Image 1: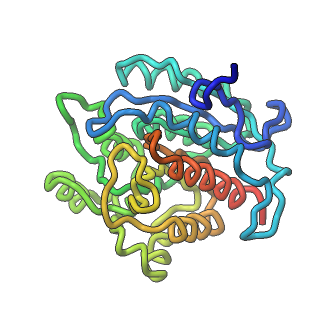
Image 2: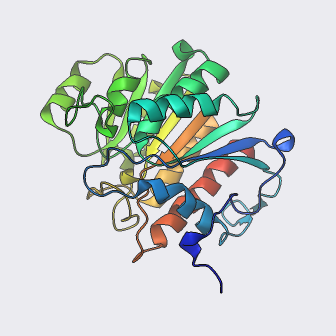
Length: 292
């Protein structure tokens, strides 16, 4: 008897897997889901994206190019501790095993993983003083502590601001008063709302605010729920998939993107469109990074 799709283990993205010594990039699946407070399930996000990727064509219709030249190595982390402090330590140790030279793309999982991912990327690929963080999210994630913990996903950007002096927060449309005041007073953070991203002039300003090296952390809640409803914390009035792709294409063309995470997919049995969208987004990112 055949297994149902959610019982199968998907080890690769699309048909682009290759031996580690031949790969251009490493897809790192991190099933972290300890502090979501609206709906849990992001630990299933990486597998859902990999599953959906096998429905994609290996031909990018937009650019009319084949993606077969992009060879990928894969690392999977699913059995993580229930404490984010311990989980982040384990993730950091596992990331050290990624072969040198492979561009890292992290699939989550809750966005807390960006703490370990950014630390790894900034130490291996570029000096933090020469790197900006582009944080794409509907929410500020600037809490110093949330529900008694400084390790909550809602504290992620606050923690990253302690490691970076150049942060662009884009897509914001929901924050607490204390988070907003912190971002307004911080000399490290430049903020663009969701509506800002609709204007090309704002994209120009966003690019000007970034240093040459950029790490991108992307919460799928940046998208409008009408296009991507299956996220852990959906937020109305997001940008479109088309606009997000325009933004990413501009960033990859203008800057040296040293790594990226795509987080907070919360798969739903009643809707598989969001995981397909997320897989399509991964495919677009790989093209922007490696193909003209």
